[in-house]
Amino acid sequence: MGTIILFKEKKMNETETTLKLISGILLRSFIVAVVLLILWLVICLALGDFWYPIHSQLLDLTVPEVKLLHYNGIMFLRTLTICFLFCPFVAIEMVVRFKKKQ
Image (cartoon, rainbow, N blue to C red):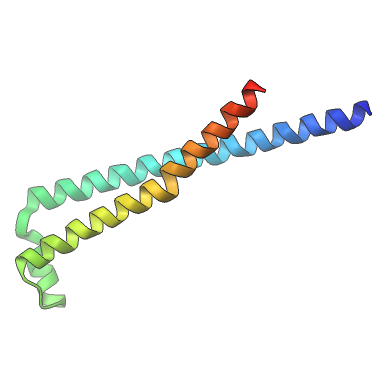
């Protein structure tokens, strides 16, 4: 019986280690995504209509449409970042802390 309990404890430690590893990866990915979002926003604000000639050659877009395209891209990336990186990070951290209290 003693070996079974030790095996369960070892298995739990491996699970906890794996969850911490995944949590760290999610946190670093979230930070990179936020930095990219901020960079994209700063570039769009600083360069203004710089993007317009590039996009107008590829597609027949007006200046407001190009701005709307970038705004929608930023919002889409932000939503994906929160849903797929931040929320799982918080959930895993809650599980790890709950298991530590037990």
